[in-house]
Image 1 (tube, rainbow, N blue to C red):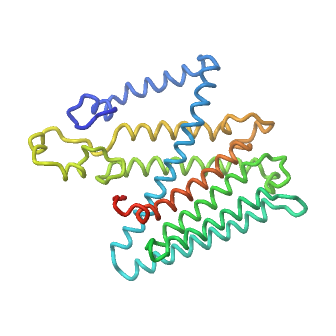
Image 2 (cartoon, rainbow, N blue to C red; image 1 turned 180 degrees about the vertical axis):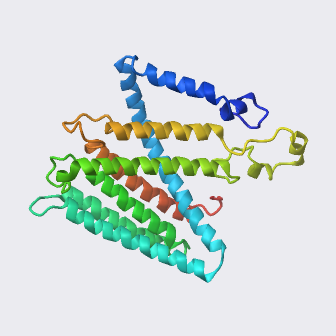
Image 3 (tube, rainbow, N blue to C red; image 1 turned 60 degrees about the vertical axis):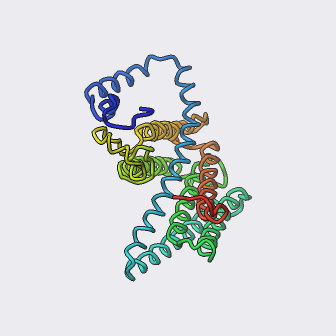
Length: 309
């Protein structure tokens, strides 16, 4: 699908049609996986670690795009009730974020145990949440509290998923007695956020915005010269097919990592997504989310000559 710019390209029909052939190939591939050597699965598992990490990064970018779009949509209405709604949602998200962080202290800092690492993770989450508000409300930044609050709540959630992935025999994991239920709930939440991210990226890809739009999309065509009018019969595609399929491929890799616990071997074979690998992947995702959000606020100030969407 690389290089598909208009619907006259033969590959456009491959993207939209041929569903019977696609389903047959899909079933054959599933059956084939039971007969390929184990080394093939191991290689795919290694590649999936990188693909899953990249999907987490894309997921963060999608979340940032969603929060800014949500905020802009309500601000554009320019009515008092929508400003009140913005404030109410922002305060609600911040209350949830800090309340949840407080609960994490109870769950993952049992009395009588030295849980300095867990305390560090939780305190850092609260500091980041407070920093988001300070930076967003700074006069030079002129940001909004809604994206800051949503990102804060998301960071608290990611911190929880990271701490809940600690091994069940770890003394500072206060939920070890409920590790089976916690593991299942973490898997469900992880798969749910994956599905929502993929659906949102697909919807945004289908819209005429700069998000995922190729150079030949309707939005960019508006800025082209009149010579494009001569090729009106070659209707341009509205989104990047390459990126569309890439998102689904990365999401598949991420789902595989969730189900296999990032291919880490431990004694909790009945646990899903449990182990120190999962913990650090989650915590690093939280920190990358914070960095990207802060960058989205400071980039226009640091580089005033550049245009940021």
